Image (cartoon, rainbow, N blue to C red):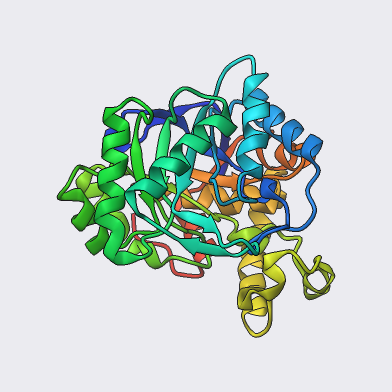
Length: 325
């Protein structure tokens, strides 16, 4: 039977040795809407209050990126962290640059990454970044140069730990031949389970810490998305252009939501809480990055803790027969 467990318990993040709560604060949406993958208008005060409430509830790490609003998210995180009674771990990423028109361009060249790291340190207001990650393995022919640069920056003390995001197994092996990969950040949710086949088993075998992003499917698994709500999204919200938020995919995703609702009702928690908690049941997953925009969202999703599901409930959510005990 499903039960709630405390939010503040920590686990070791793979070979990094970092002790992290099973939920981290995702700061993607705090970058606002004035860039290619923005989430529409975002008030800075809401962002800071959301971070403050998450830290009060026990979250001990924040994940952001230089690309989120091309610096805006990092600046907001920096302001929130500067006033925090207990400093959280701060994770950020490199390799996505502004093309000058609010769109993303990719670069993993040594000079570019060094410049990005220095700018991120300044925006975040920290002496060293707790975890620095290559955001995307693009251009693929530059991933070795990019990884070598992260290793150098760690040796210089500007980075404490290094990892990657969105890499497949072959790419992990390529950069791992230079220096061990400490962490991976892949997408994972009930509507995107591609990493289960090869990537998660590999990470478990290699002791790579895994922190998954979009565990609620970018909002699709919160129980609040409808065709009408998608239509009403602001034009600068990237989800309005994403095929997952349009038919025929939308209907399939909302069927998954219906399987989450009975457990959410029984425990008196948000549907999204059950959705992100499901990702934490995989033994290779150490933490889930849950995105927030306002303090009331933090309260709704985190105030009662994390949902621990039994085998029968996992099977029901996944739409399969339960495994024999």
